[in-house]
Length: 431
Ligand code: HSE
Image 1 (cartoon, rainbow, N blue to C red):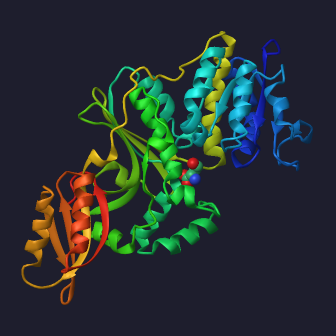
Image 2 (cartoon, rainbow, N blue to C red; image 1 turned 30 degrees about the vertical axis):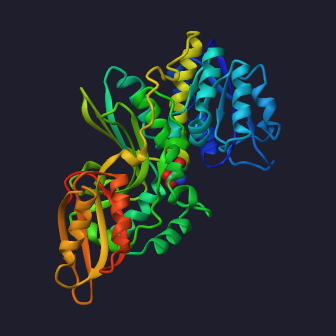
């Protein structure tokens, strides 16, 4: 190790699953990190909410005085892995005010207050890096912000939540019900005791906002993301998808509409098994990017967990440290395009509609007529089951959400319709 190297002192906010891995790797890979960044990286303080011994972290570093970390004149870089909006937002703003570069994994914070934080970092001429905030170890932020900076991204579709992908994979492969697999996911530690952020789609929505902002050079916040989780997906939907050589995935989608607006949403999607995202199994994440010149790209890997997330943080740390050595900063927020968000009601998709109907003559014609009354063209219809109550599966051509909603309302009121069981958006050649 070069004794003449400058020392860069690091303060870390949080010492949970990710923080403890960052501390471990900073220690075990000290030499490589120093060779790669051109400075000696030293963890000086670790802030926690409640004092207790943390494996691999010297107790003398641990403090509950979080403010003392962001105001410490000797600390150059703050790593925020505590999560939540407050006090993380105030602490990061204070760190930036004190000229510290910041590395954060906090998607909820960036998807809510990112614009304020990036502006503050810009004004203070420090870095605010966040590779770990979207899809853990997958280097998607740097790829979109730097490698694809010369291209025009048209659409991003991501499996960005491992818990829901694990649940949907098990439902598809083992034929088990949602509630049963959720319990297993909780026992395995994939899903939180309160799994709502994952299964209701909010975690994916924060990531969708960050991906949309990057892809389309505009500020997109989490409250602008249409969000629908996987709690209504039943084993019957999964089996119907299987019969159509398709799978159901929870996707975060950001795309440019024909009106040059951003459509950004999280919802279950039926994908043909030939689509690259269909083969992403278990808790893995993947982001599929379509751009004008590069065409289609897919990034795949581990989207959560201590060591994978720490890998992304340490990558940021090396980059930020090198910037410090050259008294420069890297890419900040790029929001020059300032595009509007498209109203979800007008977004056009193909739809899978599963309904139970009376099995008698003329029913199919009446159902088709109802779709036609909302100007929705049908691609395929199949009937499963016979007798009093038949199951109809309709796949439509592209239609607006408004038209589909109106059609479902009409269907639900028809005497021959026992129940509209489910409506799932379809992507690609499913029929
Ligand atoms: N809970 C998330 C997941 C990881 O299941 O992927 C953190 O965003």
